Length: 223
Image (cartoon, helix red, strand yellow):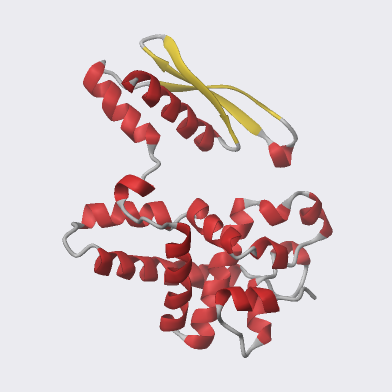
């Protein structure tokens, strides 16, 4: 089995029940009688509460809409993947050889799920306060500044608002194609405004490509 003692040091938490951390680190491809999906389900709810309470205390004057937007930018796959990478979580996950060869240790979905499972496991064994300390410490390491302007990466919405104001229309997104093997596929997206292509970009998913293209389009239109 993997040596997860360094992971425990990084978390600043040592599990009494070692089966809990093993389960949290076990991907379903590993073909054991258990995997981390149940702990992931629990951890997702725990993280939602922890981040919600953290933002509620940190921004006493902010309304619900602002707090929801900031939480949404933290509590998602890319947000949890960032925290998982901060503790090198991918190194410790138990995977099948096929998933290993498929670059599983670096997959955002797999890392994000494992992070949720770890927090779920900590919550089960030590309670909310311990899970909260670990989560907040990592959040503040990864995000030196937590506010909407810093965290907001929704370029599509910003572009839509800008073009609505300047052109009276919203842009459309067109798929130009995809390339690469299944586990490393890249998608290319074009943004069309007034029948003209104003930006193109490639990304690991259609959504990623759309956001990158929207950022380029925003820079052009503002520039």
